[in-house]
Image (cartoon, rainbow, N blue to C red; front, side):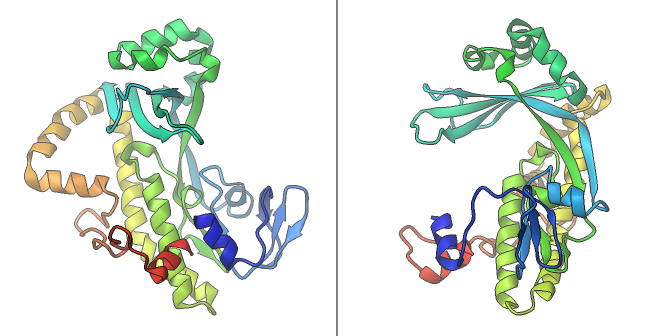
Length: 312
């Protein structure tokens, strides 16, 4: 596993440590006050609500979106929702989605996630209204969600996910680098969070491998290489989000008219597909070269070198 590879490479792995902030050069400070380090490299990957970003990088732009979603994970034993994301919308104010979610840890029953677009300020109000009102809210937009709602015990089981727009001028400072949502959290409209984080990790590993004794220069190279890719998706997400989550009637109409038209025109469809695949570098620029970030490995390929690079 990836963790086994990490343990083989690292002299010491500590679990259950909550890092709250950076300490003196090369060190970090845990929640219990313990100072750890110094380290040659500090990778900050503590998510959209990064405590380290808030504590040590107040200059980073971190703007919560006014909209989020209420989530519930249900079983999909009959495979009704298998294989595709279903989204139902009414204007830009109402959206219900059903997302296949793999298997539970240690289980063999398929799962499906229900998400319901909700204003941040309304989340507790919706919970307080109870299951019957929530069912009505969902079914008027997505009748096919009823088998999921039948498993909802109470609105207390609904989890609220808020979204943020996080922007850095650059993602490195000294021997510290931010990756994933800690570096570039955004609304999930394009569904690229995991893709972008995986490319972050792979590019970072390559930059470090190229300059193992010059960490700060390696991190400068990392930020430079990631800039075009990340900036494009941050910009597109900010532009597209109001078409799916806002109070604008006009934007809902524009989406319903424009998206089918774009999908019907081959040049626009090609750009839409490339964007959703996660590899676009800009509005007028091409995509990441196929195979340049994810090696094309054949079935049963046992190339140790490629597996080692992917695990670093």
